[in-house]
Image (cartoon, rainbow, N blue to C red; front, side):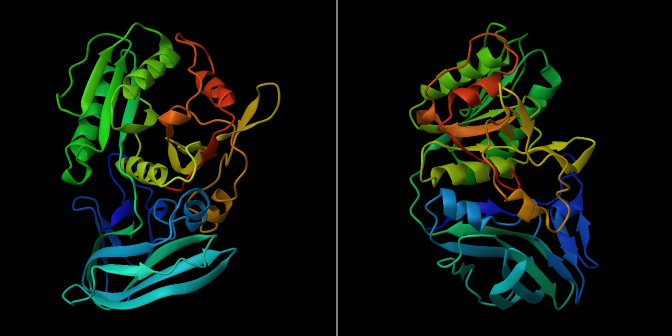
Length: 358
């Protein structure tokens, strides 16, 4: 039995079209309607990118991962190369001649027994015009399954939150591969909202207690659901890749320590190739500054910089995921500036991790 760790993410016209965050290609063309990559004969597509490289360093450091497999969905004939990059040195881990009609095993095993740093990525060299629909990294390791609650707090942003509920319901909650794995809890501090009904959707009408009070109410409600072990705090515009949520859940399910936390990276809306914040660093006297500020995530060496870890003091509640049993304190049940900062300060045991593509 395979457990999914990470799927390829491809550009989405509704979210982000900065293609170099997803792939690099010589002569390839991305189809935004069918959402696949057309790779002409004798051309190459590389996935050593912000959204699609696999950080073996962080998976090995923070999780129990011991086995890794690759599954591809490609129409055409060519060569699949799996590469490992560490400190600028690139080596081949696996290379396979592939054609979509051949009887090759569905999963390609990648030996990671002696790899503890750097990242792994896929390269496709086409021998004929081909279509790359996707690929994914999996493991055969045993993983104890449980659910994750997505907690959103909103106040009179009906259009934004309704759009978010509909998107999460359509692309996550109703997908058979994620059946019963995710719950959506929306804490509504404002006027009533219309929303789709479903087993995985809970909308709670709450007093206007600000973001802090709203998220704490959501956390309390998540704790009442028997199979929920992890929670993500999210913005009501929910403008992250759905795959980022799935990766985060997989990572936390395999975490060695219940105090492992994943915080999302914020990109500039008007220039999504540039990182605004990837967690924040404590300075002194409750002052902080954003980590990886103004890092250009398109640059080929940006992944090395991104994976260069510093002690993260807190993560913003636009995307903050944790084990529910690692929470020792609640924030104030009313509006307070810096509520997410205070929450991080109170939980100094947390190991806050940032992942490329999240």
